[in-house]
Length: 257
Image (tube, rainbow, N blue to C red; front, side, top):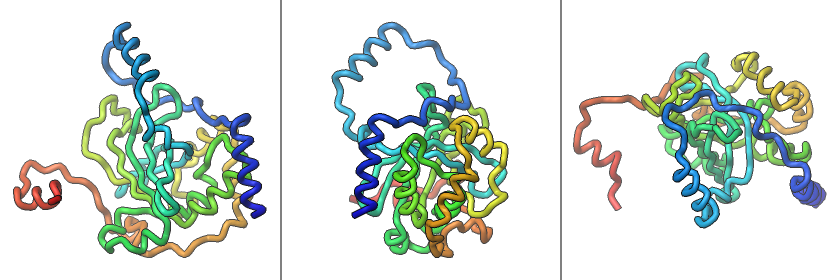
């Protein structure tokens, strides 16, 4: 009850103290002409008149870091806008910034340990744990009071994520070209490039070291050995091919109803 009351108080405070956005520009400038006056008018009308219920449900903001499965040195900051679907599942839209020019990089699905245990063994190889991201302080929820963030991290520490990036703006790709990529999360100290972390901390005016210290009381979960398969040399990525067996394509790409 005490934790619930603290969290409720923090939610009330959010109305007056929420911040933590609009300090990270997109990595790329997309090619194309400026919006016409007609386009601007249409966009304004759509914004006023159309219902956007699904988007309104993405209520939480998380900032962290990813790397390409199979290439731990290809790292980037990832801004997650998250919807909690139920007690055991979340979904997130991932952007390369938190301002008006942010580009959608991909998506992440997050499940609790309970749901992760139900996944097939091969499927688990596509997922990463969040234990280190939480305990190290590299995963943050900018703008909310510390007590509320701590409550959130207590739950996220034992979750697992499946992440796919579709626009590789970290490679200065001005268009969403190339194959979608499976992403992973960091699992040990020394893996994340320090300059990425330092730049993030400066923009948000935070100290990851201080956050890490404050999370010492969050219990370290037992991580399922089937997650973070990249650590064991088991890599999974999309492959572009010009020859696809039609029967296999029908089975995998178009499931029967």
